[in-house]
Image (cartoon, rainbow, N blue to C red; front, top):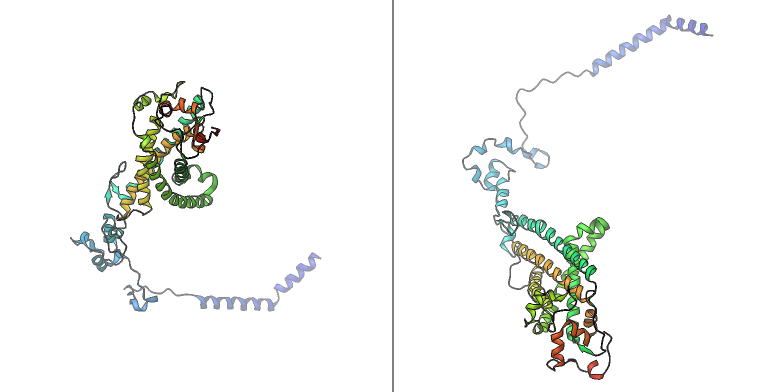
Length: 406
């Protein structure tokens, strides 16, 4: 079978028809190659001129500022050129404009304040910052001082309170309750206190999340939920602020009389109120520690926080809400708020789990005689002496003979 195929193949190769077809195929291939051959185009010794702008696509002409006027920088007044002058010799080179922007040069604007014409504020040095433009200086104060040190201070106070509670526990009565009660807070006093306390807690929680939340909440709940949460808390913060401001003024007016310095306050402070001992130092209706919270926290820091907060809300009349003023207001607001929260954390601790009977006093308005004698002995003595009425509200338990669980 294989010999037969070989014989037929040799016969075809020796056939004149086969060789004629091969010659024709080679001739056709050579002709096609000659037809497709591309001759090189001679180079033009002179560069082609750029077509006029009107003849280019869309009438737009591209340009390289370094090729249009390469020697423009040799002009002695090159560095003093305005942006319009520079545009004549180097179109597209806006260096003069951005140089003025960096210097804080004021442009023309229709906004209320002239400083709105400044894209970048001038150089200043805020407390704790380097000498740089005001926006960067504010950022340095916030990120390098307020956030790390403020957050650390809050954590230190929380840890100190926890350690004190573990070592001391709740302060309890040494004697037995008598069943006879004294009105410590009237309804108006309690209403003012609770409204102010609720507003303060809302402001404190929202402020902590906005300032420190990205460090302890964002990694847990993710950016989407954290973004919605901070947006909601920002609005809560803005609405709770005015409520806190109004109730703070009511608190100051209501309690300022009983928080005036009195004899025995210095002794109380020097002995730490006797909190580490078995017996407390005698005090009037409010002890020296509570007076410090009132004057330092409620009056001084409270008014600073309220004033700066209302300024940030743009609710203060006849002032300019410029960026510089806003930066100062924020730094003051944040710093005072952190200190205020530290003071109030101690107050909240003693008013809840730190001292038995303190929370019920603000809840019901009444305390047992034993509680009054052990915690505020001078106040109790004045009541027994008739200098202060045991019942200040009309139709209270001390008038009707009713008992109040305290």
